[in-house]
Amino acid sequence: MSKSLFKRLYPFLWLPLVVVPVALTLCYHLFFAAEEYESSASVIIKENQSGGGPTLPGMAGALFDYGNSTSVEDAYILREYLQSDAFFTELSTAFDLTGHYSTAGFPWLQRMSSQPDASDIADYMTDKVAVSVSPDTSILTIAVRSFSPEFSTKLVEHLITTSEARINQLSSRIADSRMELARSEYAKAEKSFRGAKEAVLTFQTENGWLDSSTEISADFGRVNMLRNALVEKKLERERLLSVLRPNALNVRSLEDEISAIERQLTEIEENLVGSVADSSLTVSAEYNRLNLDVEFELNKYTASLAALQQAQLEASQQQKFLLVVAPAISLNDATYPSPTSAALTVLVVSFLIYLLTRLIVSTVLDHTI
Image 1 (cartoon, rainbow, N blue to C red):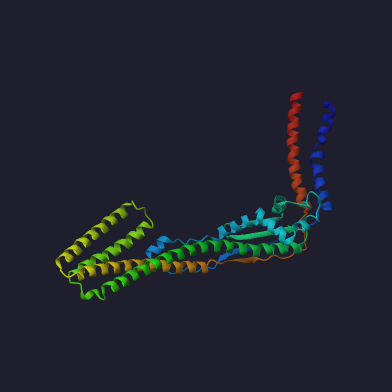
Image 2: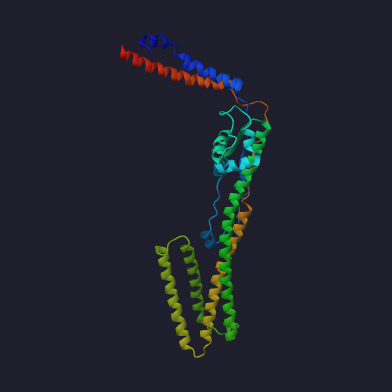
């Protein structure tokens, strides 16, 4: 094409760059594009939880943490699930998406492939299923487009039902994990407590020991006081070890106090036993040591029982509901195609391309003169 001819045609660039795209767009949307109907619903996730609950003892409170995800987090989880390849594959099996979307609409532009694989279904349905989350209100909005208003509404209702089942399934897995841990700790504590009680009964049977109060002298009150202090220190050590490392300063200081009390107990018991010819004091000391173990195991058992009850309460409150804010309804007015909006969009884009092209051509012509 000669330069003179190009200059003569140059003012008419707007025809192929603006008029033709807009005309093709209007022609497609007015005469070829099939009508698509959108159905949407808005839901909000609510948790079946009360604010109050049993207060755990210190040891149980350190062992178990019962945080809960917020409704906003659940909404984002559902959004990712509803737009996943696996979900679209399940949805295609349940509703025969291929049969609906591959038999209607304009070929190549609106229709799904007649023999799609999982990725083809996901790519196609991502454009038909829109899921959005409002961070301020945690409202989840689900919209579905299809070639039938009834089919769109049916899909939206199925998505709501599936979403509620899915979020409860995830919550149940978390609750089951907590329950398993609580049951395990409770079983171990119960076994240890029973073992300590059986040791006391065996000792009483073998030594004919029924009541230590008739055998213990007044000086042994010091031993009881130290043993009680030892129990408190050991329980405090258990609580610290649940949140601190063994080499922490507070833990080491507490270990020193426990060692000092144990040395005092050993010294007093040796002195008492050595100053008394009768062996009943030695038997009494062993009996009290076994009772000390029973008391310690009882505290662990009580804490684990409280933790199990708390886990059971949490599990009963884990159920979540999708409350429908705006229900899905069948609309007879098609949302697509929209010739006016499509033509305006193409017009704006084409006009920008036209201006850019004129700028480039003008620059080239100015430098070739």
